[in-house]
Each structure stands twice: as structure tokens, then as C-alpha cells.
Length: 151
Image (cartoon, rainbow, N blue to C red; front, side):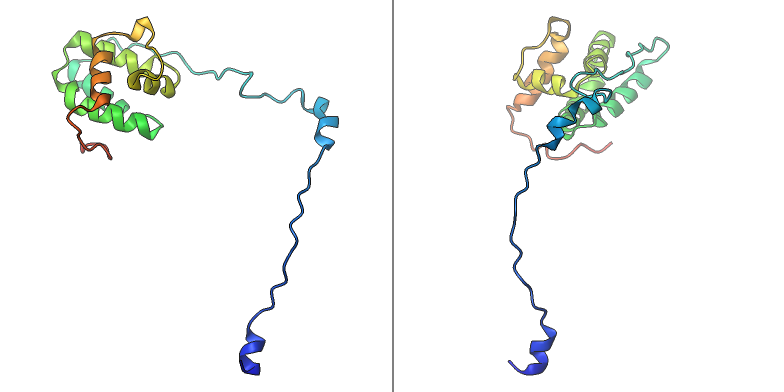
């Protein structure tokens, strides 16, 4: 290697990695008693308000939108494909059941666990729409569901 090239290559010195374990936070724990921790504090999520003056077409459009925009990809995929397949054929009772299912639980993971069978479905949500959703999640006809259907 010539002298010119040697001067362009920076010299990198190895740095020793030192793990530093601090025990000082245990001494000052009392200083943070007024901090709100998510585990001990319930989130203030507003209660779902039933929309009584909504016609069937508007309700279907709202439920389709809410099925797509869940906040977690898993439910977005499951519910959007479910809504695309079944929502147009639902009667008023089934629309109400689906509305309650996707809007009353405050945690989307609950819906996911119930639909996949990881947790038992509570009696208030164990109905014909939940049975259809569970069947849809099993995907017996092996459809590819890697993205939401087009609107």
C-alpha cells in the first residue's frame, strides 16, 4: 500500500465495552411517587355512544371504515376482509351485533384473542356474528389475506 492511500484510511482504535449497572435509582424511588404508571392507572376511554339516527347505508359505511382503521394491523386485516365478505348481506340485527363487537371492547387485543380462540368469548359478544368471525379467521378455503381489500 502506498503512503498516499495509507494516509486516507482512518485509524480506528478498539473501544472496550463496559457494562455499567446503576443501583442509585433504588435510593431515589420515593422521589417519583407522583408519576402515573400505565399499569396502575386505567385509561380514560370515552364510552361508546349508540347512533340511533343512522340509516342502514351510513351504518354499513361507518362499520366498513371502522373495520379497516383499527390501530393494529392484525385486526385491520381480519375485520376488513370480514366486512368486505359479510357486511353487505347483514340485516339490522347483525349490523347492531357487529357494531357492538368492534366498538364496545376498549382493547383491540380482546377482539383478536376472541376471534382466534386464544381466549374465551364473553357471553355478551358470543353471538352469530362472532361465530362468523371465528369461521372467517380459520380461513378454511385458504384465501390470501396479506392486505386489506380495496374499497
